[in-house]
Image 1 (cartoon, rainbow, N blue to C red):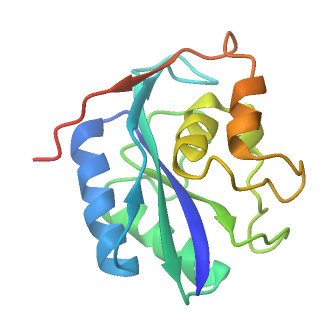
Image 2: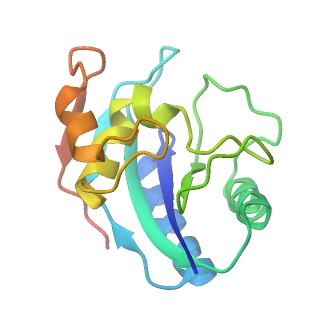
Length: 162
């Protein structure tokens, strides 16, 4: 079983789509560990704030199978098939880590956004503080402590799962 970490984000009806994503991922992967939910300003474009979180799971699915399943979940939940990178979205699911794999196909892992986006690094550090980044070689807690927090505005929110 591979240990995986997935980032979830939404800025169109975000509370609804975060709830839906957790339900769909639970159906696909079984029990999940959930980070706190964070709100952040849009990065790379002007738009409504995002809700973001990271989930951890174990799976026997391959990276390619996971990426395909995540794309199907996004599409079922209103994401445009050819949406541009920096735009509003109902749901964004990104595989961050697959065990300690360092790969470039079918996606790049570990995902580069781990080191550059607070909305990925903070919830990942919360879920896996002692886990080491397979390239940087530092624990996620240390990476978060060293992160320049003036780069992006991000705050933890109380989230109603009902």
